Image (cartoon, rainbow, N blue to C red; front, side):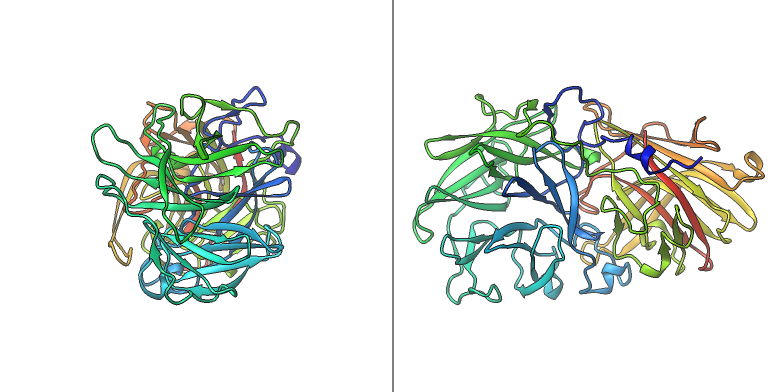
Length: 533
């Protein structure tokens, strides 16, 4: 049964615990979904947030909010990256690589973004993009040498700088197309027990003082992951250091990496991410108290609070995770493809009201399949449903719905000759360290059923995945199918564990819709809806 746009809209809000929120307070995590490496700025009455999405396309999502509670995706800085066929899932992959830690700035009436793919050689060259508005269109302004986890900074007189790595900085030319010769230097040296990188630099200037904020990985006894701040009144002078946040939160370990931002009324807020296992790296919101000239994050005890008041009241409910009935002729901004999409192999117009995913080349497994479409899974709990017409699949085709990551729990419709099967499987990919080439996929089928026997006349099925990311619930996913979208039958692994592995995907689990050919291209599926229960 079709669920039209109005009905889909009634399913909002979703994401970031908005499902259970009964008051106007912001319940931390502010965004209980994978939104790592944040940079946040304010332009007028609007806050803008960018995050890392690595191998997903379009990339470098730009999110906006008026109240620091209701966020929506308003655009992407780029549609595709094209430096290598690896971005197209050929000659390797870019799992866990691609776009990292974008820096967002507003200067001289324009938006600016700086990002560097986490790659060696020309693939890792830094991009600087610019746009007249945050929604875009964004254009490439220049390419520079690689700057790890960098931030772009414009001084009061417009002089541009890049702060990057562990305490490194340099001045850029005024046209942002080169590095000023002789300007590269270290502005601090890390302490002896900070054996990990100090990274994720974000720089602001407040009341004549420069502040560089970084995450510090400390391994000494009694010391934890924390956010540190270096400050100076003279960029060429001595910088002094302070710890501005060292707080665990919500039953998980310590958190850091992000920035601080002010409101129109002069209040300050800190936005930092926390690793939370299978759901990914979530965002928290804290008050900022300026104490002795330092931006101290947290409540009066220096801890991330459970709740925060929205900056404004009465704003409409918005979300970065959105259901879809595919009635638009344009793909919604809530969606991202796994690697670059093949544009002629999907359509929203060939069958109006449906997303058509067509096979276009033969591949051996899900991890090399083009045009897999994703949205974030989210906490504390979530439930995603797709309805698929699989009548036009060809022999050897595999299509379905999964909790996608380096370890994936998948519901796969398989066409074998003229017979269709539904399988729940556990799939685990092995990747080379450098090229991220797929060397093996361990595909373990847990349970399978013959769809032709259970639903001999219809070739339409609803697939559902429930996620539970509450503390102590082991990031569990459960899998279901239905022939009417009302009565559900569980299949396969119960409480499948979603994992976060920085060595492979380095991202939180995603709802993903897929269709690929293992024998011959040319088949397709039509997806009727994606909804959130």
